Length: 346
Image (cartoon, rainbow, N blue to C red; front, side, top):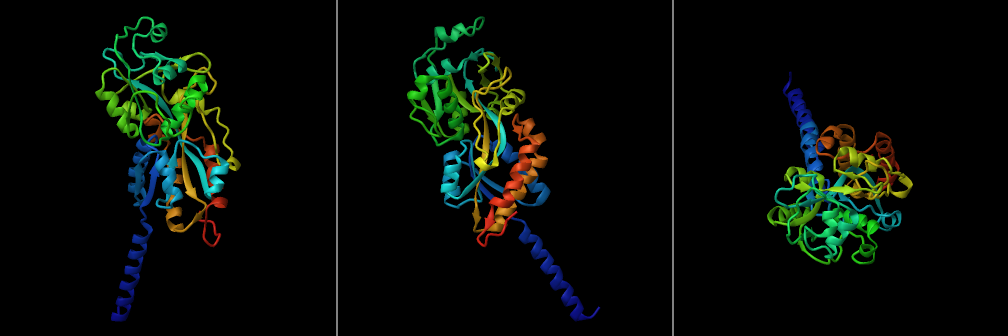
């Protein structure tokens, strides 16, 4: 081979090498703590599969919404879905990525996970500060046979703007008129009593450390931290525990419509097996992409997660989105997410 041909071969090889390097894009995202355990699991597997990394900041839904509006990340994540009007105002698109459950967790000596029973009304009155002791008559009445201590209840809630808080307070607003007329439902509310921790991690830490505490976290955090969670009385009057079956029963009531930005809230759904504090976690992206190659890399990750992430989601007690819904979502990307010239990114 001539020197000129060898030189050309090296140039081609270098170009191929550089091309391969260019294809590896680290995706940036920020937002909800609710789906963080499964996003971390997916990111690890996707990195091994594709070479592309995911840098996801678990900062709460409020922070995720702010960052995607400011275009400082490739995608935002929120457990509070935005309405069609909110999406249009900020030129955003939204879709559901995963479904899970928010669970009350307690620190009570001698009480095993799933042994304590709570109703929506009792839970609301605890967070309103109306029920102050664990042996209050309202709690004892629904826990016959369970020995409850004469102990102060330490109420723990989120300090940050949080989709987990939105799901939790949305449920309380549906089951308690006093809660609806008081703190209400949002990613951040004025808590009547208690102490506050940042993120699911902060709430879990406070509950673990404080005897007599009650908090609310995403179910995966309760499992990972071996926390004592409660059963809840659902809309059909049945006491149910949190797991993929009860989350799935609630999720089955969902009606996902692309034209409405896939807006859906799954709290207090009917069904004898439905977990009453179920919610979806949503992805937010800009309709017009300044960095289309980053947007495409992010969408490739989400498609991969839809198609390959169900097993790991179920292992962490999340519910994968139904295939019919994921097909609608992926199809919506083609018409909704474009580059500055109006060309579809995906």
